[in-house]
Image 1 (tube, rainbow, N blue to C red):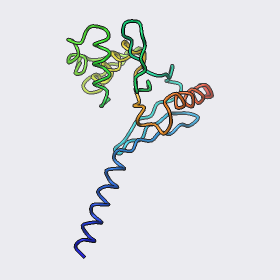
Image 2: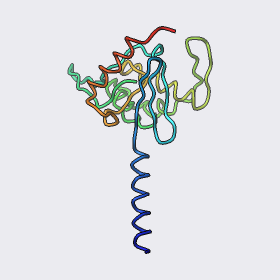
Image 3: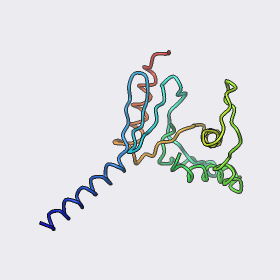
Image 4: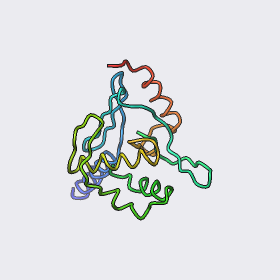
Length: 159
């Protein structure tokens, strides 16, 4: 009896760990959404300018990176961008940039929202995109996912 209970607990724990690591996406006529174990994010198609494969440029050669451009796990990507632009000594200041951020409409953000906005500003400067999705989170090849999302983007009706 004890071994059955122990085995059930182990299986239950394994299932929970699998669910925690699962990342899924929803594409609708109005938005693109990422679902994580605890939350996620939503971006309306009208707020997406472009979608593509992230690349690292070194000595004139572009190497694709396993990220699709759309924050928690993107420190390495930010560091790579800083290194590519010969400013890696400023990396820690970029990651934790607490300066208030003022958007194009004049709205000021402070605290964690400002830190996120500042990091996105640096990523946009390095790669031309704000958000990044790991290719390992996809259920298909990155190029196929980009093609699918671009079709949704093209079909989205302006609001």
